[in-house]
Length: 262
Image (cartoon, rainbow, N blue to C red; front, top):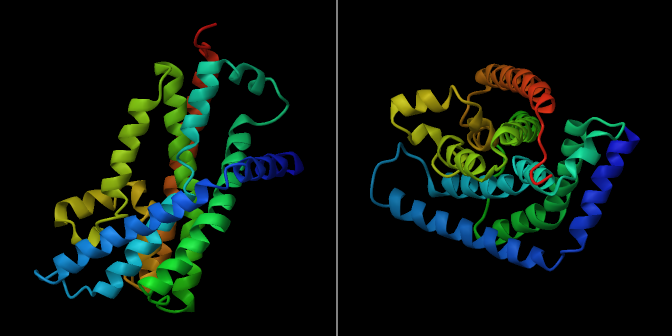
């Protein structure tokens, strides 16, 4: 475990070399939230959206904008770069688990984003827009748990894309497709409760909801307390399913690994 924590520390340290980017990330988060809040003010001011308040949608937008910065689905880019450079061959012969190496290195980036982007952005948003408090201590605890679940599922989805890239030798289209699915079905911008009933049902059968809708809805208390356990069970089932898939693909990928260009 100490070895993997060193990967986390190294990734955090590497991010520190690009501290000037923090200002652009903070600006980007602020502008993203500002645009979303403006849209919701226009929508809620003109049509009936089920008695959802602008304060609720503002908080929802803030929470999901900041959560996006912490997710680990971007690790597929790391694998793609290693495939193209050929460095993956040396990484695979090291006496460590390559998937765990990716996970802990990704966590280093997430910790950096939490400290230097998410927390400052939250404070700025709180001062400028205002943020509703958690529905209750129980929902706050559920929200924190859901965040951890979001990290796990986002990593597994990103890892799944990277493994499929072993066959295509280019992850761009796959990563783009994953990004599109996340944008629509995670509910990060449009909450699932505003989806048409059929599409809401589809979205709630997929794992993407745990990367946006579920954490924010738990924070706000939109998901009833009696449903929390069922939501977490569904999340655990998805983690188990994704684990089985990536483990199977990992074995297949290693058996036919071809380093691009050499």
